[in-house]
Image (cartoon, rainbow, N blue to C red; front, side, top):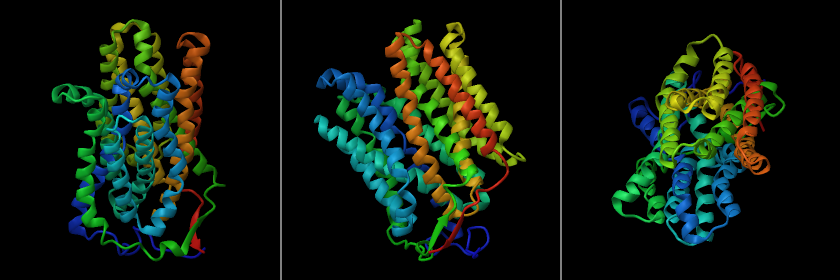
Length: 409
């Protein structure tokens, strides 16, 4: 097999940072990561206002919330190709332009434009999701745990901010739902302004286009990593979309149910910072992956069936479990990759296929609710997903790397 340079064994690519700029690069990565989830979480909290103002049907509302998730799966797999063609830095710059423009255009009251803007932002998020992992592998190979912790923490912080601050800021500023959605343009524009001076002068690594990663899609370990990513996301989006309605059906007030979900998401922030370091210190990640899968399903069942007096404690444990599975899924993409080129391809595969799998979770919860008249049947679905997640984690957590390699075209 032909040798090729990696971040840990040779000089960095021409577009990589020099040592004194690593701090600024890390800050840029964190700010970009922060902007990868407010598009989802800010929409859900003002969706009733949108439906009331526009007369949108239930089917259209469901499509609007699902559209960005579908984009995550549909466009993630083209990210490695774009990274090779344009360079990682310039591709991420284009992603931030799409996210900023899409977020701004969501402030329109025109429904076709709202759908188009959500898709535009979703495309940018899909590609950035993939390439940030490759960037960490390339430029922070000796600091992977720290950077993946900061990266996943920023993603969770963005999701929590969108869920927790959209309505309070909307009320404090006297905004309509259009302004509430559009105000998330501000952090996106900040990240864009910080990233542009670094990205625009950067050139793509000429060697990248001369190599093609082979053997990934036939590798069992790659599929286990992919399924772990997809199945944990299916549970995460089910919680994000349906836990509040479940709790309201059990008798909690609407505001209280929303606060429970917000607390669970907020707890994920510190968990995401700690988990990658913990994972890297283990001989393998099998016990961690299986344990987190069991904890996720157990606490989700507790939220559905245990006495409501303990709901706040169960929400905290659920946040720990889901923050752990999310950060572990992203960390294993990097840990199971031998180099940055394979990391980009594995990230595209895991997130492309994974998010398409994830989109089925909340959809099936809604269908089961419609068919049975309650959310109880969803407990069986969550249990089945949890078993599959534990099995995938048992495979993906092994201390191996995928049998794929970047070879000359």
